[in-house]
Image 1 (cartoon, rainbow, N blue to C red):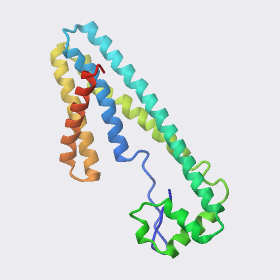
Image 2 (cartoon, helix red, strand yellow):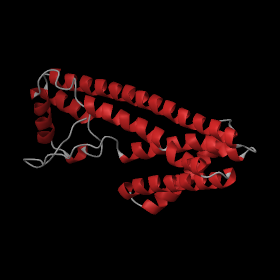
Image 3 (tube, helix red, strand yellow):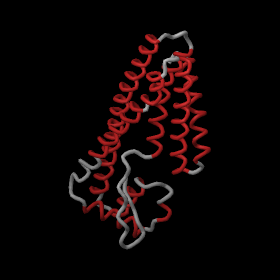
Image 4 (cartoon, rainbow, N blue to C red):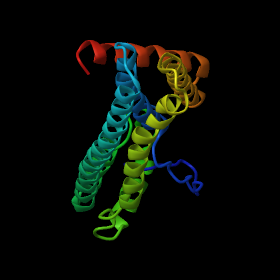
Length: 225
């Protein structure tokens, strides 16, 4: 909820990304799983071109629909989080006892950060918060949340197109399916690799993302997804 610094004049924090690396990786993984449950069903039958067209329309429509649903759910979750933050901010502002106010501040901080802070640090944060104008958090993050929700929609919905593209440009259904699967595996690996560059061990993360994606697709198809 709140940022802290030990320096007398902390540097201006960089602007937060619309979605963090884990959010982006999760949304792409979800979108790829959705489209793969459709494209792999083509390989389970002797599908003709008309059958392929119907499946592809279903895959695109499904990912678009779930992109919208995911975006709305993201906004609902962030709205709840903003309300909790506003409630905590109000409690700190309304608390007249400095010691109790510092306890409320600690409750909003990561347990990893709290041990590094002194009473003076906590008091400085408390005074900063109590000096903020009433309702200053009312619109905090509103535009960022909308941008992030749009990002969620785009990640889930757009990742369908590289996977279905081989079916649109290759007449041989079996060859198109192999090319589609290859594209999906590459996208899974790149998603994990990109996340791993931030979290450490990019190659391991890339391979793990592929394995997890394949396993989840298998589970979804086995359960009729």
